[in-house]
Image (cartoon, rainbow, N blue to C red; front, top):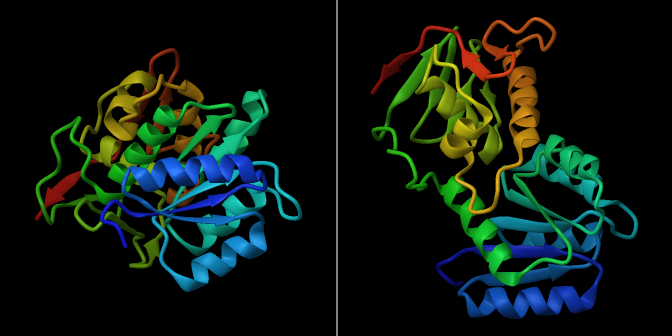
Length: 241
């Protein structure tokens, strides 16, 4: 296995699979290919995967269904590949748990940049902002977010699974409590994107975080919307080692 990670391409277009596989292999990644959901599950059963490049339109189960299944079963990184121009499809993909999206046709260098970004966020090694001290925990409203192991625990003690994007966004909030954070600022803090920002991404991630935290989206008490400005995280936060 190479050091850079294992990437699974799920796309029914052989030409695209061959092109991306050759390119990423040259960049030092281990690459597997599947053309539908069944083949995807077979690869996942055989070997751990770090990132899935998932086409939106597939035979049988579509990419959105598979993204939801992947997110229910794991925290693997997901980049949706879509030939559709409608941004609604991209938003739905993010709501299903994807970490990023890339419209077709795409430049291989841009794909590589997004792959590196998602894998870096997943490993907690993003360098655009100072990292939290090792083994540090944030406690708020009975919840505990472990900034080292990237785990979230409910007041009951049960672990609540987060995607890489959800963790990075929550970490940005708990390390900047009671501050109004614009969407652009949250993109800088949480996503570390090489590509241009997509403001709706933050709105989708906030909605998902609210649901997981049990924060009523109609009357949120933890992540509040500041109209025209962004969001503010209101609970008192205690940082402990």
